[in-house]
Length: 375
Image 1 (cartoon, rainbow, N blue to C red):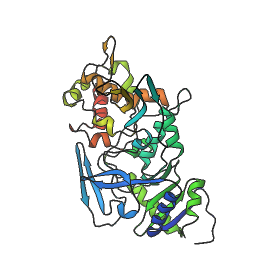
Image 2 (image 1 turned 45 degrees about the horizontal axis):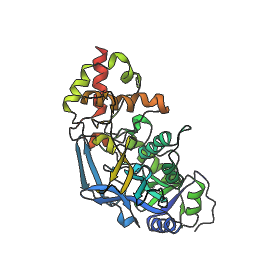
Image 3 (image 1 turned 180 degrees about the vertical axis):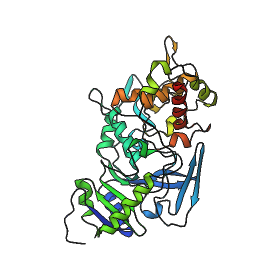
Image 4 (image 1 turned 90 degrees about the vertical axis):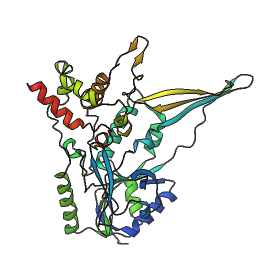
């Protein structure tokens, strides 16, 4: 190991075999190392032990309603764009037990919680890290704080990855969330053929790297990485014009545009877009009782504003049509989210486009709405 001091912002070259030792150090420190894995012709986020668990030599072809894995002649580990899953499942679990109760002579509540896991997330892209920051605004507000989210967030170690191979549905460059990861990571990787260019983002990341064998990054290596990122920024599959957002979607005169009807004819209200979205946070609370009514469990579960019953109130359903539900989702994501949290609710990952079975492309829908209201 070189006798050199690592500072925040330092960039060094880490040979790929050393990365497995870094993962081992994280597990020894009590982290569960989680990263992308191949499963069922897609890519999921699950436990990993080494680079061998990652999808090596794989890329993805993505278009509206289409996802396909393809083999490449490059033996790299991060040339793909992720599948339907996002990292929010580790901070905001799809199903979370709130409490249980059992009755013998009287009802007894059990609020015992399992130990909060500490995750080391491997391969977090710029758009995904931006999505975590957006969810922070929803779950860590001044007037409300979700204790489960906070505990998991505070115990998180993030190994980010600069994205060099955007897919056909990506538009993170339009929103300033990628392909380069700018902040809020512990370590950030840029993949080279035989090594990773590693940027130090936190004191914890610096302490872990201090025990590894690395080399100083030459100007040539750093320029090569920077040029690859610049190319990626110019190869986005989509471009979203945000110059008139959120006004375009929230102006009262545009809420009755004909284009909402056209989209509603295609939308299935299936909720796929909200389930794969890394920023959506709608939930419901369910109670499950056994047949003898002696035990019950209350859980928080993911829900969707596309669920016909999500907007049901005592006086009836406030959004009874697909048109009203799609308009609510799009105008919230690109409109009223700004009023709530000071930013758009989208990071340009493109998942909602890829995993929509009807192939609805909201980048194209926003452009079509813009053209209609100009008439």
